[in-house]
Length: 279
Image 1: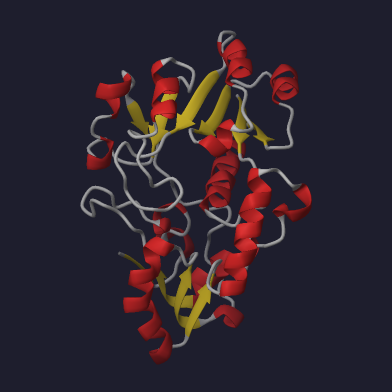
Image 2 (image 1 turned 180 degrees about the vertical axis):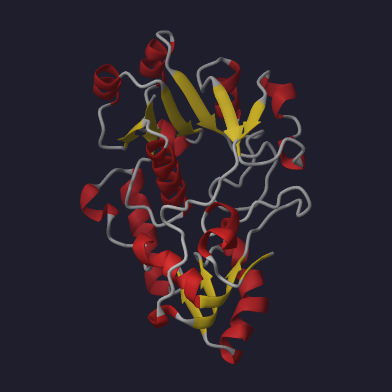
């Protein structure tokens, strides 16, 4: 099959980049063809030239800014299947992608009108409380497509330069402030603790604002103003060389919303570290 995947900016330092890499590696490993659609791509030209079987996107204003649904509709009539990741129906957190879909009336309208996709999905389980109401209000069911360990990028490889008691890989996002202040920072004073990620300093957060603005308005010269502190080639070495890899996932329903970064990025069975703790 031919897969076409939308990620507007490959320069992003957040989860969208890692999820994209996971899908790309998985499809290529299975022998499929994979094509990347970015804000700089020509949608009509790519669809006409490639004739993909599947188009994967996420339903949000940022993606819609660079996506012509009428053009997609023309190819959907010819057999293209559009897979659309949706937000939780009810609010989970304050991070991008965590706000509720039910109050985004224009997005719900697109779903009801059949313009937003053919198959709607999330990595949330079918009984997750934050999805209650989606099917009843849109007329569409949602599928659960779980994120998984990317064993092409996350595998065991010890490197003494990354050795430590505890590691934390992740951005210092507002929803994590309380957890980090209460649990992570005290540990930094007691153990050999290494932190990797974005937004940990005022300077990095300021660069992040510039970068996000450049990505939204597609200003190529500034989209890469901030790079990932830890390369994809080295990330697995951190987990392999840490006694404990600490992770935090902010959720509303901790019983049924237990998807954590460990699950899709660095599952301990895939990389061989001693422990991966998630709250």
